[in-house]
Image 1 (spheres, rainbow, N blue to C red):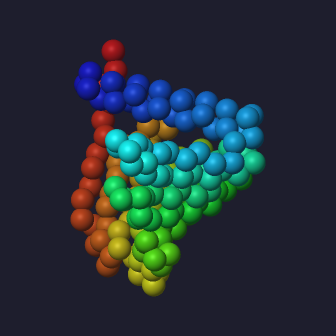
Image 2: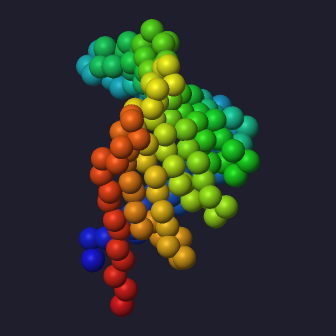
Amino acid sequence: MQKLLIVFILSFLTTLSFAQKKKEIKKLGIKTITSVETHGAKTITDSKATYNSSGLMIEEINYDKEGLLKSTTKYKYNGDDDVIEELEYDEKNALKEKRTYKYNSLKEKTEELISDANGKQLKKNVYTYDAKGLKTERKTYDGNNNLVTSKKYTYGYK
């Protein structure tokens, strides 16, 4: 039970720090953040993130250890600033994977659909919540919509 509480607190703090980061990015008018690593005399770009005027990441580019393009991910958001779509491209800018998300009226993620470049479902996660808004279950389905795993969450209280 204590481990679950610690995980919950860490998740909550991570969310707060992300919100603060988004707020600072918007306030300072930051459009891109580039991460560069230096190994001896060699400097390599590790990643680059691009943000919109609301401080939301709209594109993330990752590079390999040689500094060559590894992947690009583009993000779309709904009016509540929740990610509703992620498009992941390979090093040749070909679409690899598409992830779409659905949310309920309480802004809780209820579905995550992962499909290939042709739109074929690879995996789907469905989330349920209790009356307090705590996640109670995650069901994972394969490409044929067959249930693969079900993970239940229980919470202990004082």
